[in-house]
Image (cartoon, rainbow, N blue to C red; front, side):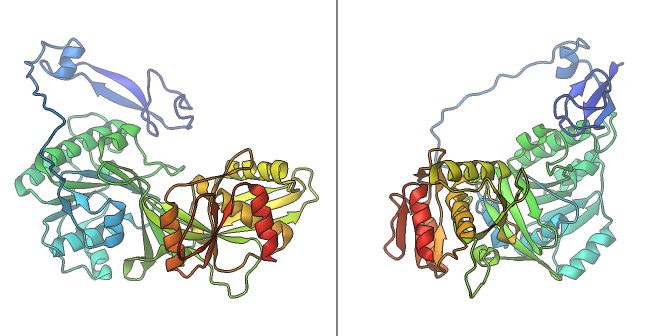
Length: 458
């Protein structure tokens, strides 16, 4: 008889403890620790031998090889959706496993059903397995999306043993599992959706993908803080982790690759939700720019990079006198700690007085910016609002601001300037060394250059 023992596992991070507690010591989440029953492996298995439950199994010698190969490339499968293919790094790699997460209702199932239809219409054998919806519900969505005639193989199942047996016999090219939290393995006593089940089911599906060459797409639920539910080991097992993001009240969606073994991380694909499903946005810069005929103070256009794609976005700032002892600081779409640092540098190095002003900063369009190259654009918007001086139209700004007040160079300068020229911009404020044959580039070495540049705009 295999021995069993009770353990307590955090459903948020996967931390294992010997007893129940209200708060997980590893991740700090409350009420996430649940009791799970773990079993030792059968006699002769690796788990059984390690726990003393049986004799050691017969080992097999592994073969090593050299790094020098024949120059093989991983075959790619194009989905027919340019934005999805871009986020994946140029299409789906054969034998890869992808994990796609997002908030409820963001459109994960809609996107994957459209991808399944595109692959099936392109000649690929696609299996769509849902543990959350019935086949009739999926058919209703397909009818609404105009994809009801696509030769996609549908099934509603949650038993991992049955799913793997079917996939091994049918051998599809692409498998979509919606979602991994609904699957369960009868080899484990834990309930479906627990960390033990999610980890085990993910491991078996990834093994199937590597052994058969089938592409496996897994849908994952997210926690309240936006992380994919389950242990981080699930993200380590798959080849790519993608987040499907949206802002409340906005129709566009962003598919962001946070990990990709076959492409660039932080690559994005932009979609717009319509009555007929998700449509590709080929030019995201036009989506994130505000079309104002009359320039307003406190607005600067930032030339950013998302993955390998240059994107122009407007940064808006409002600076107003404050009657409070501690002036308010509010930021949307940017790091609040970065804003506090930038305000301190502007006060100390440029002799500006933000300490007695309320400061509000917003990234237009709902895009979230993480790269330090946005420092100079944010500083330009703040100075423009403080001086009440609108910046001249047709100008883009980018550069990193150091604590010394110096403006540091950033990567992919040429791509940023080319995107600005393509969208009709005529000039740029950029770090020293940036140059363009088609744009008028003003170089800034420190914040003093920025302040003089902003004042000249008036």
